[in-house]
Amino acid sequence: MTNRFFIFMPVVVLGLGALAITGMREQFVMQPVRPLTSIAPTLLGVRGRDVPIADEERKIAGMSDFMLREYRPDSSTLFTVYVGYYDRQVQGRSIHSPKNCLPGAGWEILDSSRKPLAMAEVGTVVNRVVLANHGARALVYYWYQGRGRIESSEYKVKWDLMRDAALHGRTEEALVRIVVPIGNASTNDTALRGQLAAADSLAIAITSQLLPDLNRVMPPAPNSR
Image (cartoon, rainbow, N blue to C red; front, side, top):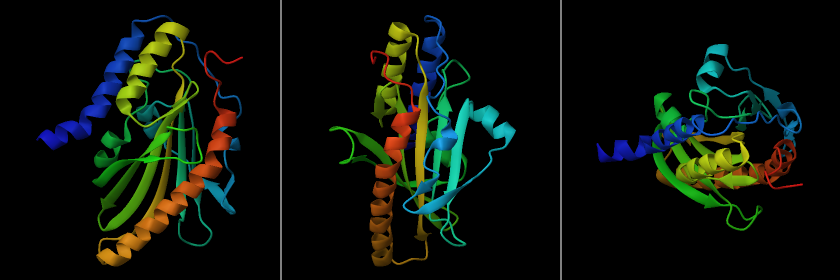
């Protein structure tokens, strides 16, 4: 029971943050500097294929814009990248924590940790999650990006959201997620460790190429000129 509580705590915290900002000053609608479709059409030499999201799913997620791409050098998916952008966040229209959405979609979280990014600013950390679903396994890197910050902690995201809403009237943010398939449950432990190490290397390389495009798309920090 305690473990389940901590798994769902991030979405509760984000929800409380969304409730709090509804009582603050009016929030500006901040459009991306460039279209999300301009983000990484090709990554690591692989051309991406845009994947649609059903209207009902978009309504539930609440994002104002998104980019979801599969990168397939052959018949199998090498990795996928999702960017869900919110031009402002209010009650009923705010980022949902993947730690809540993934179990709801049938994925079991096998391991969850944080990963420092050497290619980004000092102190930049993203979430690293290993998942299983009906024999399939995947490695996920995800983070929150907006108002000049890259953040992994849902609690810090909530704090920054409320502070920027109060001080600047800005709550725009994106959820960025990279998914790399890593084999299945029948793989032996030694092979799985090797696949996971390869998936980590791939996810880091993807992130290194993705971040410059994301920085060009996201609105600048509130105090930037």
